[in-house]
Length: 79
Image 1: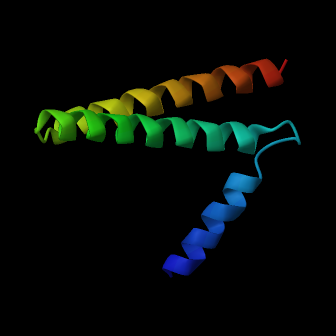
Image 2: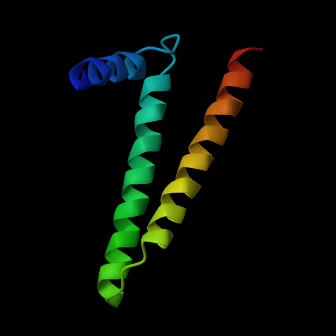
């Protein structure tokens, strides 16, 4: 069952665009979230702290920006 959902996710991430690079944009957004979390982990490691709430806030903040950007792109493409 998990392999079916992972192939479904792969198919979804490749599709959904009109050949306009939307999957590339989605990949860049994921990379931004991933990099932001890694940066926060590094910051915490350097300071010798563990703050899972700060990690979650960084991830949610980047994810919200990605959702907002996707919404604007979608609205612009519908014009």
